[in-house]
Length: 346
Image 1 (cartoon, one colour):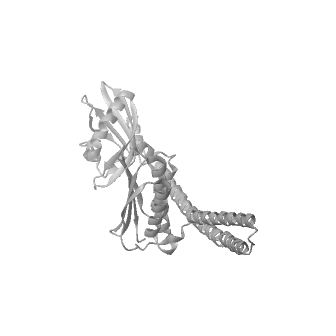
Image 2 (image 1 turned 30 degrees about the vertical axis):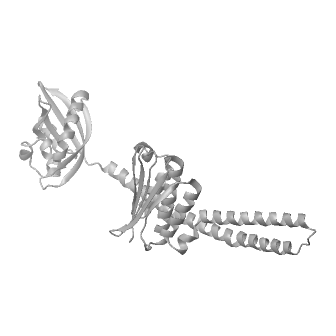
Image 3 (image 1 turned 180 degrees about the horizontal axis):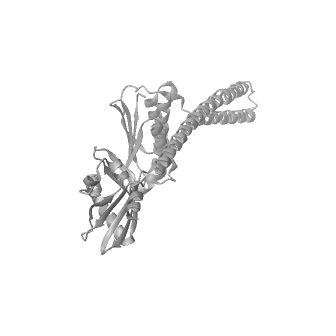
């Protein structure tokens, strides 16, 4: 019967390790191991009998093993991941299930290891799904920018032209009125003023949808224009540190940076209670760097990482899709810095 049990033990497909639990809450050398453990680690049974779990793990795992043993003593069973090092100095991650029991007055630990195939599949599937979602997000952003451009062009070309023609017609009609038709002339002047206001509204709406200056003059002039618009609307002052020459970027990257800049300014207006914003922009080691720093009340890490902070998530996602990143640093009552870093070349 004992030979049969040893045969079963040796032919288990998963690595199995048996050792004693010492009084100092440490694991003794392996008293039994099966053939699978030897094959996985590259040792013979005799060699493993001179080793223990700690000696075949990464050095950094020593601190993690202490609470593992404490939980094993307290609960009698534990699951944990162990980074093992084979005889050939290769890393092997095993999900280990350890059970503690008493035999002949000794505390024995039996550990069964298994490669985390299921978890790897879940992680790979999650990674694939995340990548698909990011590709979808990128596609939707491209479509949205294209729609904004088309709508802005249609409003500017169609509605803008109609309003301009109406203004001209009203002005010509006003000039043909007689001196005794002052009431009618005042009404026409009022209508002309209303048309002027409508033209300004059309220009403002089209600029919000897609600022023409971004396509015509480039990113740096567009950032300057947006900052001036923001100052006019909020009264918040700006400090500038911008390059004298335009940095050549693909349209997709220029648009993403501009939208991140807009979102950062929106957050300043809504939440920061700031009186000054500093804008720093440069090209460094083939990366486009943009920093927006305010002197407001700051933001906590919980707010930065809050999944409901869609504006911050949107900024980070835009940069990530282009191989870049958005880093937000803040000190309470001393302001916030939003740093955008995107590679210029693909």
